[in-house]
Amino acid sequence: MQLTKKSTQTIHALYEIEHQKIKQETAFAHQQEELQLKIKELIEENKVLLEQQVSKPSEPELSLKSELEKERLLNQALQRENQDLKRILMIPKDMPNNWTELLNIFMKDRKKPT
Image (cartoon, rainbow, N blue to C red; front, top):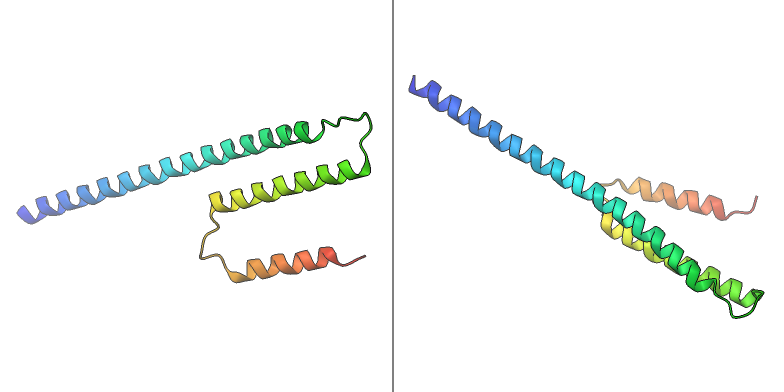
């Protein structure tokens, strides 16, 4: 009788621990999704602000130099955003190396003239 009571208590405690673990994991996943949405919103706001800032030429027509500068600034902003996203999303360390290799092959194929 005492063994059954102890077993029941142990099972109940294990169930509670597992239940709390699932609740915490769910809450964490929800927070991560909210953060990703907020990051996307901030990125869009930054893009708009950057475009407004870059597209305020003092002359009526943009010269080729200012167009190139605008592209350079937009590229820098996109690179910073990509770096921030990579840091925030933290690609899992157990990701197979072949994914990186496949990406490199794909990028090399894109650079070849057709």
